Amino acid sequence: MIKEAELVLLPIDIDNRSIVFQTAAKVLNISAGSIKDIKIRKRSIDARGRKVVYRLKAEVYIDEPMVPQVFVPKKYDVKAGRPVLIIGAGPAGLFAALRCIELGLKPVILERGVDVRERRRDLALINREGHINPESNYCFGEGGAGTYSDGKLYTRSDKRGDVQKVLEAFVAHGATEDILIDARPHIGTNKLPQIIMSIRRYILDAGGQVLFNTRVTELLISAHRIKGVQCASEDKHYADALILATGHSARDVYAMLRRQGIAMEAKGFALGVRIEHPQSIIDKAQYHCDVRHPNLPPSYYSLVHQARGKGVFSFCMCPGGIIAPCATAENEIVVNGWSPSRRNNPYANSGTVVQIDIGDVPGAPDDPFQLLSFQADIEQRAFIAGGGKQVAPAQRMVDFVQGKLSGSLPQNSYLPGTRSADLRTVLPALVYERLAEALPVFGRKMKGYYTNEALLVGVESRTSSPVRIPRSKDSLQHTQIQGLYPCGEGAGYAGGIVSAAIDGMNCAEAIYKALN
Image (cartoon, rainbow, N blue to C red; front, side):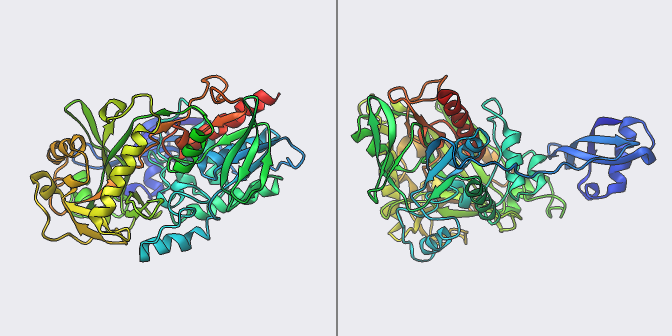
C-alpha cells in the first residue's frame, strides 16, 4: 500500500531516516515498523516562522518495497529521418533536438560557437584579460547562456508544457535526482557542462548532427517557404523546417532578419543592476539566526516593489554565487550571475531590475529595434564608466540611493574587477529613480538587506530579448515564412532554461505535425 503524507521536519532531522519514518507514521497513524520506504516527491524550506523547517510531500510505502525509478535515455536511430535545421545549441535547441529524435526526425544543430569544454578557455580570457570572443563567450557556444550562468531550473512555465519531462531528461544525462523534488531546482555551472556533453553524444549516437563554428548568415527562402541556410563558411544546409533558437543576445541574427525583410517587433524587457551581499547577511535575514545550520542551503530571496507604476524586482538570485561578465562584444558591459552546485561562494547576488516597456523609450513605435538600440546604448555607457577591459562600474547600495560616489568598494566576486562610479550616469532616470525608491523598501522587508556592505554592479540588461519574432499561436511558424519556427528566449517566447527547453520541444512537435 502507498499513502501520501505531508511531513514537517527540523533541519537537524532531515537526514535522520529513523525520525523521518516516525514522523510519517505519526501523520498516517500507523506503526513505524510497517513502513518499508519513503519516496520524497517535493521538498521545500519554510522560513516564515521563527523556526525554519523542511516541508516534504512524500509517498509512504506500507508493507511493500519501493521500486526505484530508473532514468535512462531511450535509444533511437534517425539517420534516415527527415532533417530539421536547428540554429543554436542552447536549451531550446538541444531539447528541440531531443524531441525531434523521439518523433523520428533528424536534428541538424548549427552552433556559431565552440563545444562546451572549449568555451572555458574563452571565458577564462574574459575574466583574466577582459577579452571578448564575439563567437564564444558566456552567451554563445554549446549549452547556451545558462550553461555557465547558472543552471537554475526554477520556472513558472508549467502551463506551457511538461516541466517534469525536462527535469527527467537532465537526470538521465547526469543531474542528481534532487532536481525532481526541490522547490527551486538547481544543477550548478560546474556540473552542467558534463550534462550538455552527454546530451550531445546522445544526439550524435541517434544519427543527428551538431556542427560548431557554424554561424548562419542568411536564410534560404523561396515563395515564403524555408529551404535552408547559408553559413559564414559559405556552406549551405537544406531542410523544409528550421528552428531559430539563437538566444537573446544574437543581435546579428536580428540584423539578418531585418535585411531579409522578415517581420519582427519590439518587446519590453527589464533593466537594472546585479546586487551582491555577503551570503551571511542573507542567511541571517532569512533563517533568523547568526549561523546557518549545515543542513540548510545558502538562502535565497525574492523581492518586488511597485515604484511609480513600474515593477522593481529581483530575479535570477544566486545564493553562494558569482557575478559573471556576459557581454558579447568588446565595447559593452553586461553582468549576470551563477552558482556552483554546492553554492559555497561567500557572496549572494541577484539581478534587481525595472520593467521597460515600449512607450518608455523614444523612437518610432513600429521600429522593432527600438528597445534593442536602447539596451545597447546602456551597455556601452557601462563600458565607458568601467574604463575598459570588462571592468564594471559599481557603487555601494546606500551610496547609490543617496547619490554619493563610493570612496571604496567591498571585495566582491566579479573577476574582471570593479570601478567606483556613479551608476546614475549609466542608468536612465526611469530606472535609477525607481531602484533608489525600492532598495530601502526591500530593506524594510528583509532585515539587513539595505546596507553599504552590498554592492551594485552594472548593468543587468540581458534579462530577456528586446525583440520578438512573431509566430502563429497554433502552428508556431513565423507569421510570414512557412517552415520557420522562432523559438526560445531569442524569439521572445521563454525566460530561462526550462521554459526555453519546453518551447524547443513544442516547436519540434509542431514541425512533426506540419510534416505529417
